[in-house]
Image (tube, rainbow, N blue to C red):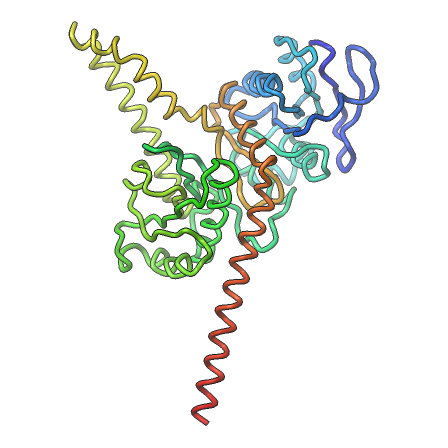
Length: 385
């Protein structure tokens, strides 16, 4: 491991600082514009994939703080040429496993876990964002309690990029909130619109509410109650949409509860696997099919890359006071590097500020509507008197 790596103690509430284990130099490297914390212990592959992905991100110019068991992290870093790269290491002794039965309790009881230590670095200004491929429940708990919610946000939500014909669609919630109320869906819509604008680069994103039909009377009681709230909100809301409208690019932001969103996401992953496996099998069925498959390889490769979750970086936790990306548990180096890139875009384009502004606009609109309604009631009562 070269001179680019600084190893530091997990001193929470203070700036990251320490010594370089190889050279004995004092403070860490000069801070880059954006510094992202990567949970080195997260994911099915442990430190290997997280560290490799962090190295890729550092080579692309992002400052990296790897948090985890220092000996393991350093051992993985030694497999890479990191000379001159903006990488630092912060020790965290505890690890929250992917199979943790009670992740929220594990976060609270093992406060020196890699997720909580990483989140605290963001909270105290020593880093700008947090990325993990670890246990989703634990990551949400660590981020929500460690960073706190944006003012006015009732519940944070997980937003995921859904592949579509004309470009990515932001789908939320994809698992943070299986049961919600209409006002939660309203806030998800505002946060999703901010995410689409700031992270995906979509101007005036079209927002749709997932239902079983476009008509107003269709859908659950929740959907029917949420519809007028979204219609009155300062959004480019196009109304109810159906599941097939998402991959057809009819919207840029698709809003639903966490249960439905998670089912949609997992189903799409299964269908993508089915299509890929079927094409491979049929391409070997006979000579002409094999020839056609060979000629189609470049196009099929582009399709596969467009569907590949590794290129989208993971789900962003919207509504907390910091940029947080939670990757797939099976994330490899490419997926981790993509997650870092998503987190960096959120920081550079001030996503948290945009969410705060959007929520404030919604609250102002609701208060204005309530004031108008109250004035109307007074006027009616006066006429009656």
